[in-house]
Image (cartoon, rainbow, N blue to C red; front, side, top):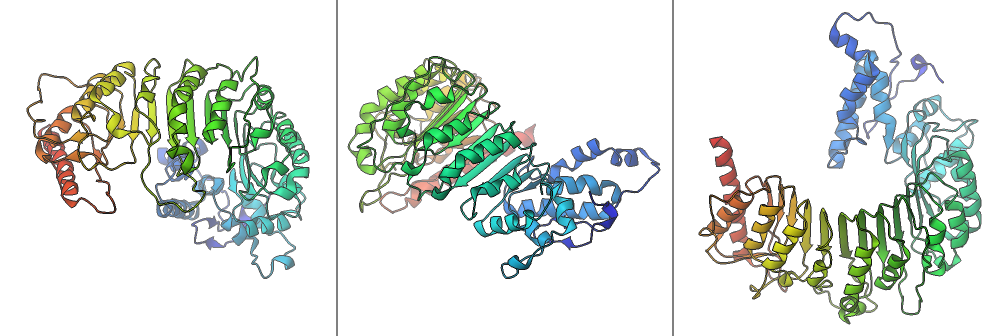
Amino acid sequence: MLSFNKVPKVGVDESGLCDSANLGPSVHSPVSAVHRVLLCDELLTHILAVYDVFESPPINRSLEANSRRELALLARVCKVISEVALNILWRCLDEPYPLISLLRISQDDAEESSIVPPRFLYYGTRIRILNAGAEYIVVWLIRNVKQMTSRPFPRLTRLIVNTDPLDHVSDVQLFIVPSLRSLTLTLCPRENPALSGLLDTIHRTAPYIDELQLEWHKYVLMRTVDVCEVLRGIIKFQHLRKLSTDLEISVYPGLIKTLSKLPTLQSLEFKSYVSDTRNISWNFFASSTGIAALRSITLYGSLPMILALLPALHRCSIVTCNIIIEDTLEAIVDGCHRDRQPQLAHDIVSLSSTLQSLVLQTEEPRRTHFQPQYPYRILRADFIQEFLGTRLLDVELMYIDGDDITDSLCHAMSLAWPELRILRLESSSPLTGPPAHMVTLTGLKYFALYCPDLRSITMQVNGTGNKWQDEIDATVHFNATTLENLNLNGSLVDSPRPVAMFLRWCFPGVRNIESRCRDTFEVRDLTAQRAWDEVVSLVQDYRLSSEQAI
């Protein structure tokens, strides 16, 4: 490794990454407790973790750039903390442009670059997480690192790479090191014959990979992919905990039996992008042993595929179930989803007795020909009743019949799920008037009474009328003191003050209330929106008054 004092000074590039300036280690005599802390790398790492964009992801790119810039400045200010600051600064690269700046190449002189700068080797040893980025950048990196006698990133633990522009898929091997634990590959058709050999090579070099994601470009004809060969390569990773792929699984009935050979697999994600499922006979063989360690499953695709795959999964200890249904608009409008909802609910409940998190949503329907966009519904409210015998903690159901949810159903949910943390029942349909039996603010009161751990509610309710202030009972004690977010988008209200007082009574700790009125036929109801704006303002005023009183 290069001597620290020999690293050339470059400065801080636009991303905030510092090319350090002769900040070599020196011997210091600690003269105070503060100085002794700075000499302890473990303590210093903990202190500077606030700037770590991987451990504490910023909410936007601007804050991320500021965090990197602060670390770069710290690395320049003091030799004592420079090493730790640089390690954190270079630990995670979600884009490879700083590496390109170190290589000092451009698209014009890429062919002429024949020497890898020492500073590239020096900082490459610090990188743990690397997203190789856009196609032309991957080519640049490969052309340069091929000249090296050793691996460019010897301490890499996570790699994301798009192999499409590479002349040979085997070039990915240049990034594979024994320390690698997470690998994401985006593949293209011409690589299929070499893919099985590549997985073998990756396994020999990095046998302890525990997260593997294999994706193909959307333009790929998936029938050209040898699913059987790919799966044989996958099951060699016996330490695999998480697997995600968009393999066309319809052509391989033995899918679950094969994956049951992975003893440590905890998370499984399948994505199917088949555009026309009418001529596919979905059939999967169940495994006698199941996938013993499986705790989370995510299925993305058509409803027929999902209904065929769920029964093949042996009853196991599933904790999290995420289902995203993507189908044509015709299939939804024709009602085939509604007819199969009881079967879908039964299969999910039968999957596990330990289910805690259920997410069911639909993607924007694919349109086979020009059709106007309009709100659609997929789930009936009685779908929820199938799960009242479980102990769910998180429930997120999108595109549900909002006007079919009643106060009595909310009462039943609050009693069945006393440890509920997140409830999201989202409807896509705007309301022009209150349905006869739609859930009211009374339904929200049940969750405040019986769900003390509730943190977030999303629901469309009927808050019309001015009776809500009269229903407030100061002797009633509510348990939902942890609620932070209340999303009532699309709800109805006409008397802001009674509604605000009722909400404040039920959820005294709520800080974020979202209440955007949905447009109806491209016309915004400004009166309704002003009413909700007043509700939000009043709730905030009540909260501030209570805090000042304390």
